[in-house]
Length: 596
Image (cartoon, rainbow, N blue to C red; front, side):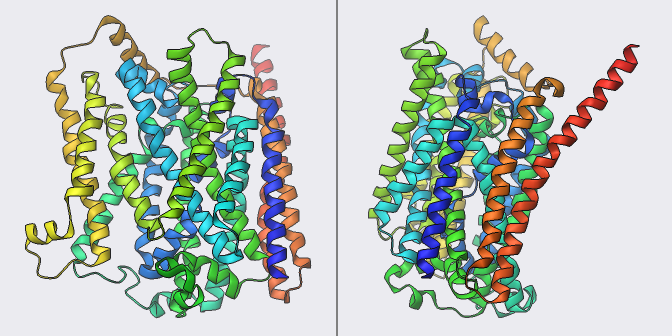
């Protein structure tokens, strides 16, 4: 009976997501609308999508398993994200919006020229597909382990739902769904964290009863390796969240001020997040729950079910379906952002530039939808491939992809944001150097090599080797790959007149604020508040009504709490429409008075 309820909840949630794409389809009339919402979105929508792009089912599987095994250590990754978003707020976010481009590769084109436009267009897409495939596979693992769903079917169905939403509504649907999914995920996880703390008798008991050192974890002979890993995780996440290639998060913002507020929202959410998301995993570890016994078929991946086991054991009937829906939402938010971004880059930086320079907007929007479909199918295909690699650790896979594949691309995109006098070839040459460094770290560097080189007395444990490989990869890219880019300044001999003008445009735009007239954009602003507000109210009412499910009184109150959080946010959004109108009326009256 419980599984039937959970399955029904997931089905309703899927229909809810599909409706978002349909409702926002009228917001799109050209490629600017399709890929960045026409640069008209309010800060709370942009901040939500910025936050959600660093969040997926992996958080509830691979990362939750790491929390179960090693305690607080995994939270370092998310705290590093929070630091990155803090820098977004303090400096980068408004300047990213001020680049005044539709796709991030157009900014690369201005900064580094036509050759790099194509190099970065085609080198970045595989990384996005691989990351999204890992996220989708993580979701399938949970759906299969908890409900017995076929993994391949889960991958295909989820991928197709994301495709429909992204293709029909473009960036408006993608970012709107990110906001709604953020609200639901935070409400569900806050509720779970409260129950975990209540069941444990307090956070102190969780820390005290944790089976290994709560702050460092297990399987460590050399604490220095853990310390080095932590430091360079902060370096990596700073680089990933503050470079031109990832500036797409803020291109949709209405203006510089909204972009800055969006960065602050993402920072606050990411700071609170780890203590909320991982409390259930820490709690069941402190309770001595044996995941290997609960999920024998999962083998070495039993830790990936840490969060699920908490919901099964300690939460009321129906909450599992709601949580799985939230996990679907988290994965979809990462996938749809990748789909929309990749499609935009292909259309605006290859199709329009190389194949069809004279294509009109109607043709470009059509090609955008076709390319989104192709990229979606590619992600589904790669997720199916990942699924065939049964022994792969999701946590390690995500770390390796980020440090050995993603990081080399961010270095010229970060340093080039500040260092002006470099030759154009510095960007693609840095990618080549980065590829060599990644090969040396990923293939040549073995445990035996490290053991012999540093004459270590104790053999490296599996965790130490995994952490060291990630840390050395990041360190190598910072000093070797980054050092190479900086050193190219020696070869700078000036650029052509055309290129000097383009580079000058890049830096002038970067430093020139985007300011909008609130009166002019009020109708679009209120449409955002209205549609999302009522959607969230409906979702909140739906969750609240789950108190009717056959549960003890405390279980019914869990759904009232969770639904109440969602409902409150929806009501605040709808209420903000009236406040925005009143504020605009007051400003208009002041303007008229000043003129008379």
